[in-house]
Length: 211
Image (cartoon, rainbow, N blue to C red; front, side, top):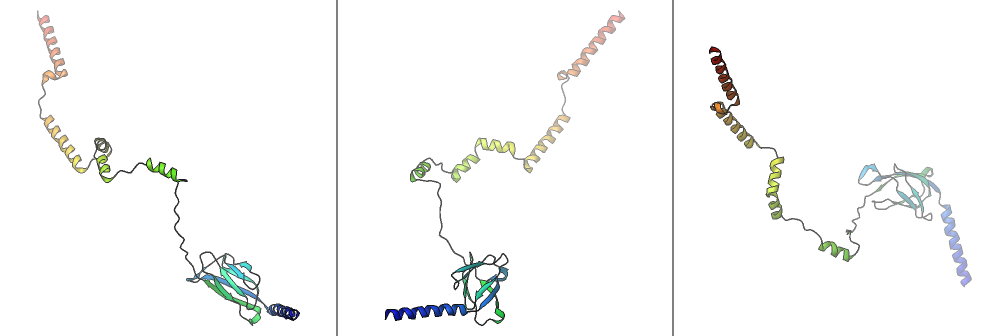
């Protein structure tokens, strides 16, 4: 009985192999496009023949592929960022050539959030946390902005506005008018003193000459 079962299994295996070998060869050719946009080509897609011991072929940078397969083989198209697509070569292909357009759909995978910390241990974190300098709040920032040093620095660096320029011009104009009508004391003028001394000297000379 066991021998009979073994012989039957052997015949079944041979029959399956014979059936596989009987499938005719086909030149499988095509171009891979993005399913959301027919004008966008997807390059370098992996093509796995599930009926040929997982044999893998890759499309080129233009999404084009062409290789030999068998009728009724199942091909799986995979690419990073796209959902897998299965294509079955039909039977009784004319001219031993099968051409198709494969459209694969983009697939978005949301990965969990990963947070990186610069501390290797909790002790380092405690040390940095204790010695950390807290940022100033709004009140402290306002106090620094109206301090004497900050105002003095702003006065020396910032340009004057229109009101300050107008006030300075008015003051200068007023000073010019006052100085133009003021009477200068000749006793405070060095040139006047020089003229006076010269006049006195000339008078002395004239008197000595007359004597």
